[in-house]
Image 1 (cartoon, rainbow, N blue to C red):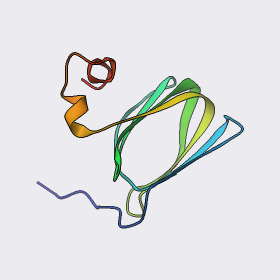
Image 2: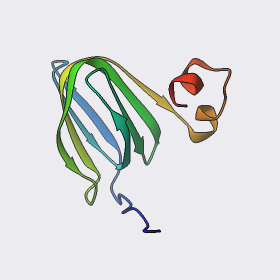
Image 3: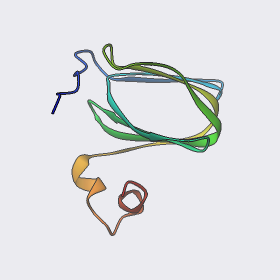
Image 4: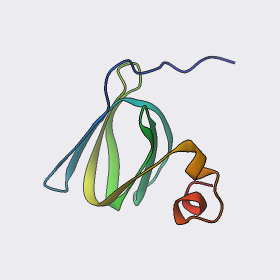
Amino acid sequence: MEDKPKSTGAHKLQINGRGETLITGVTDVISFDAKEVLLETVQGSLLICGSELHVSHLTLDKGEVNIDGRVDSAAYSDKSDIKSAGSLLGRLFR
């Protein structure tokens, strides 16, 4: 099994006008669709929710992701929180 490339830079989340999102420090894209993008970052899991979301640029070698579309929320979760079935984020990340 191949090891995934690890981002060496710091993590940054930048949302411009709720329409353009730039994220660094991304180690993996877990899932995405028009309403949700779930990423693994060096700071934990990140769930971006909104409408008409589109991953416009993805460079995992550099740990960079650009997302276009209306962003309604961004929520972080540690790996231990994801496994917690009782929490809302735990249920979302299953």
